[in-house]
Length: 575
Image (cartoon, rainbow, N blue to C red; front, top):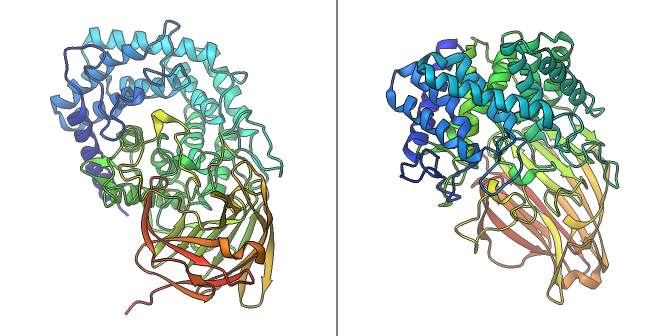
């Protein structure tokens, strides 16, 4: 693809986004509100709205339109409402978390360094003074000893590198190097960054690590990659390239980041993560040397474009069809990354396959207790991941967390198994709670009004050897959300993936068979279900889930009296 073609399409999307941000900017006489960006989904002014100063100045520079420049100035003035007395910037009006100062500093630094000549001298002085305050706060309050998730250390490594370079501050540069080295020590045997939990070195009962693929792809790795480029740390740069190669195994052929398992799957939006920045700037930069990185950046960009409606990046592919409002937070964060990619220059690159297009038949990730399977056009994840983040969140218990087909796209994609506001300022509630349901396929039973599900158990997973395909055997139990096992709740599941279909064989104990069922939500219109043992309990229902943002058809399959059930999932043949 030619650089001009790619840049033109990226610019067009960024223009849509920034026009929407200008449209949503508040104009009121109250200084607490004036200049903020109002979120249509959350009904609030997200504190991180301030970071849009960078893409807005980029647009002002590129187009010469005064509206973008005015919007950036007003956003900077509004940011004073988020400042604390010590120089940090609060996440939101009702949040005392100030680690986001790192992201604000990066955005402000880029705005000044790349487009500051658009500002009058008095405005430049004010922006420089605020940047200086942020740098001092970050140096004092966001170090390796600060309780935080790993992405914040990576972000501050980037911020300190930028600030240290522009101010010739050796102390800042030294802290950047320490923080980056600290992050690069948090790498699993499979090459996945861990540390998205508290503490960063925490280990689950199964020995799993705190890993979030979405944050790794859209925040931690991009920040570390930029740190290495800014400081000329060649050792860190080489390490980042290796980590990106491991990360690319989790990009689906359609450009989605597979975060169906992860500590913060509640932020999974199929294209990435709700409050992270994105991968385009880092991957396009690396694409100058290896086209596979530029290819990944482009495919993910195409997904962002497809998920844009009325100028805003939706929280998933089906938000608009489901009649859900769009949170502005995604657009603010990802606009920064597109602006950075354009400012750095998008390279020409040949179109090449992604690693996920030529995967291994079966890969086990012990640090996640996940099996990833591939057969022909199919891709599938089976999750036993027991590192829970603030209660039951992601798929576990030996559930299928992802099922994807090259012709039909995602058929199963699981975010939260119980939707809850883990971070109230960073999530939204559905306008249609009557159809907002869990999209995790699972065995469950209702006994005395209480629900017991395999998703809450510590299942045992093993590879299933079969002459016809690749599979996973699961030994599980039906448990309450507190982990209490249902008497006679032991169950087994066998998943067999072939080039033609997925076959699921399950068995519950006969004592609970009359109260059990397999809940099977399937995405899209091209999936077929053939029940071989068991019966359809009721008519299929149309449902939706905000994470990762898909409409689905929910089938409920009751087992035979002896507890057995078997069904096959396929894809309609074309033509």
